[in-house]
Image (cartoon, rainbow, N blue to C red; front, side, top):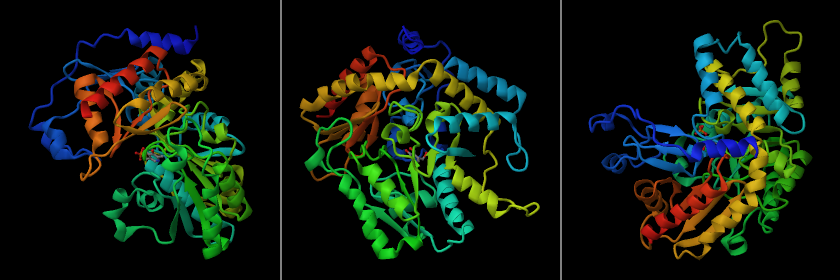
Length: 464
Ligand code: PLP
């Protein structure tokens, strides 16, 4: 039996922990403004978790809830894994903080080397941040400054894609393609941004597992934008290799290859936002490796520490790093990139990252996902006959179910199913409008996959 199976078994027999901490009083509920949540409704019947271990969350009352979402696509190694917890505890006692500008600490270098070694091609240099949003804004800024450092300061335009999520910074929402995340702030979007069409078509792709056959040609829209604006004005194209938050949209076969071809031909940087797809979610270190397409930058977050401490980053090519170094060569005290965060490469996050990468390697968790993928795809397709389900998509250890909308009401079926799942069927599902997404920790056992599908069906039954 592999180490990963041991880990999975270690957690299936879990009993609720004894000490579940203090209860939340009605007064406490008022102060906290919960992100991306209908606050008033949530506070009438909050969904609270007080402990987590392995594949489970525990509510303040001690009820075990099966985690079918790895938190928010992030606790890839499972929750509260001992080696990660111990590494964080040790780091907290040893080095609580090291200034991130003009000083650093050994674990930051060690982790950057380990991450670079996992990345394909000559993606060799890591710039750390704390969140996916920071990583994406960092990558966009690097792209602009890179062209300027090369004497191509006219390259200021950025290209994103419809139905993309690149976090909540002004850069991220500008290149992102989610209407509601943008419309409230539309007065302050970055200028000079275009969006490629998204790659989903129910007509051509319904109930496809893995990459759809249809849609590679959608990348050709980039040529149209280049014809319109001229390549000399375009800095970068940013895409999620598989859009996650807007409902698991796997790239059509040949699509990413085509994007790479066009961007390379025109000197435009290609950025893969791998905040969800990195660290094993698709059965490889990065989606770039799975698809054999090497971008100029990869952004990552979430799985790098298995969500235990916030950490994110940008992995950049040798060429990008060297361009910045060359731009200041010979100039005393010249800073090569005017960018950074107080908590870039925080010592606790780096310790957590190193322990997490050890765990992924020692338990073979990325390979485990590759091995489980066919079984997972079969299992989720079991819900194809459910009257509420209009489409199912899957890639790696992810899945999405589009649910039939309630005619004449705003999209809400996903939220209804998520609520039913948590309160009545002991499962954590991820809702987005009329869609439910699944992305369990990579330690999930085959029995737990069966349980995830059975409980999801019950939640759908209840909503139907
Ligand atoms: N990019 C992608 C693809 C994401 O899925 C997310 C978060 O879900 C982000 C960026 C933003 O990450 P964060 O919430 O850590 O800022």
